[in-house]
Image (cartoon, rainbow, N blue to C red; front, side, top):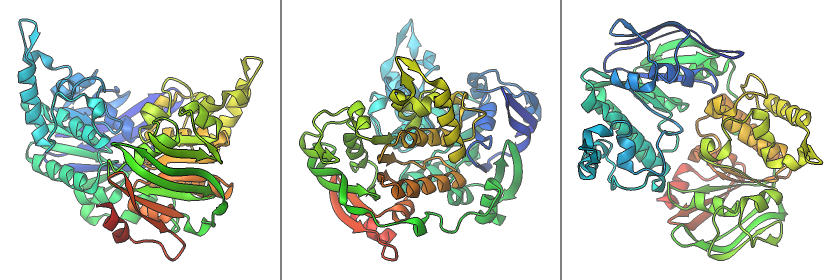
Length: 501
């Protein structure tokens, strides 16, 4: 029903897609995998009409089409659930769901909000999300917003006569296990009406859900396999171009931390509604991981340490000094770096170059008498582009045009190049391919070896167990249990889940 033939896409100094052949039949679920920067997002945006191809053909039911914008693609039944989300935070859920298609609720120039709310409830019921459609979207959790994204796409069922093609760009990256299972169940239920293209770095999920899998590398399709015959290790090797290190979490590089050197201390810290009576210590050379379900309070604790949320009770001390003024500027001056979960919103500045993003938090080191030392900024950027294997045409590239994983590497470079020795990592490997994750794990071990302390919210429990010196399990805003993760004596998945839920 849908096909790409020899599709090409070029950007200045970059050949992003090189003769892509790709097809999808009715009712099929296609997996699309590859390293960050392999061309997956570019391919998806061409299918969705956000980009126009420079060569080759896009065909629907054998007829060539060319979408000038996403609205044209939607009119042909093509919708996309974005990894970084396309919802507008200060609009209500129902306004987001019907954004651009409000006319159906307008009569004599007046919007019938009651009718829109009822229609939104119908769409939300498809994704089993029970929320008030009048809720302002920014008040929802990331997982809830992801489901609203899917509900928004599913409105195509009522607007399009033909079959649908729904693109899922990393839809499970921050969903809990039960939410992933719900999504997969919904996708399978919709196969009678829609086909899906599922992009994910979680190969186990791709193998579970997809019928066929396309593997991309450097803008080309390098493999195409039926999922029932696929071997995860072979796919990984094709993606990365090498064997994956068996010591995946670099546990052999873990060294004892320095118990006498406390970098961060929380003493009975509380922010009612978020977390309660939290007491923790982060030492030089330590990875302290906060484990818990979505909404357990982990993220709020991290944001308080960085100065974005002031606790009402207790004290936070950084390097022995009590924090009294809570703001990001003071935290950065104390050597604290923060890699947020939503890198596109809080981590990078789109429209600025890679080198400008990397040096943004430390411009005092690159200026003299009010003038920026731009050559020095560029040299630093080139160094970190090489160190972290950031796929960018040059240090001049617009950071907003990089893939999600390479944007994450830029954020990591920003803090590490500035010498921050307290690093707060909120899902640092979310949306990264397996090779890029290895780069991050290497960097975590290198930072520890240099005496930096890291507070981590991991993407998976396996990641938490593999990287940590200490794990604190958070439930309902309170610490339920702390584990000492010595080599050979790490907690099991069951140990963690037992105290999480």
